[in-house]
Image (tube, rainbow, N blue to C red; front, side, top):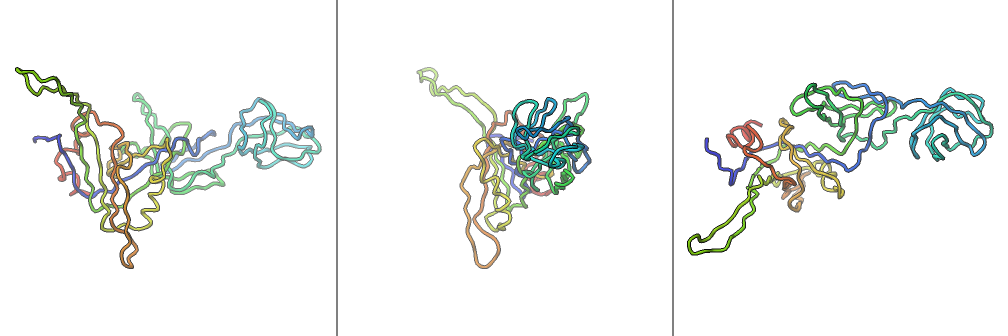
Length: 320
C-alpha cells in the first residue's frame, strides 16, 4: 500500500479522552499502600514518640518531618490537661523536634506517639491516580486510572481500572499520586486527524546553472485533531470540559483520540476558539467544535504505528 504522508487524515467517529496534567500533584502518598486491581488504600505515616509541655503549648518529638497544615493523629498520650489524643492540624513547626497542634496545654504529659494521617480533601472523583508497575527486567512504567469513588474516612481511592497502555495491571510500587483530571468525551459526530510535515525550507541564491535551489530539513509530523460536535452537544459535556478549558500556565493537556487505544497519546493545546449556540427547547448546543494541535512534533512515519495511518477509515472510523 502506498502511503501519502504529505496529507494524511483519518475520518471517523471517535470516543476521545482528555487528560489534564497539573503542574503540582493534588495528593502524594506517604504511608504504606495496599493496591487492588481497582483501587489503593493509603495508611498513616510513621510514628514519632512525643511528650507535651505547658510551656509554649508545644509537643516535644523525636526528629520529625511534619509540615505546617498537615493532619496528624496523637495516640497513647497520658497526663496532659486537656487530653491531646485525637486528630489535629499542625499549626506551627518550631524546629526539627517541636511542633504545635493548636491546643492550650495547661499541664504536660508523657508517652504516646504522633503520626501523619491522610487529608484527601483535594482529591475528587474524576481525577487521575498514578502509580508504578515494575516489569522486570524492563524498566518500571507509570499506570493510571480515573478515580470513581473516595472513602475519605478509610483513605481508600477507587479507580475504574489501572491502565498500562491497553493492558490492565495492578500497580506494585510503594507510592501513588493524584494528578489532574480525566475527561471522557462522548462519541463525536466526526473525528478528523491530520498529519502534516514539519519542514524548514531555506531558499538558496539563484545561479544560472542551478536555478531555484532550496535546502530543506525535515523534523517530523505536526498533529491536528478536530472533534466535531457541531450538530449537538449536551451541557454536561461542556461542564466536564471545564478543567481542559481553564488550564493554568504550567498545566499540560493530553489527548487520547480513542479510548480503546490509550497507548496513543498526544500532548496538545486548544487550537481554535469554542463556539456555542442554543437552539429551540432542546437540552443541547450547536456549533461546538474542538480543535487540538500537537505541542511536540511526531518524529517518524508511520504515525505512530499500525492502526494509525494504515488502512485509513477501514481500521478507524468503521470499527468504533
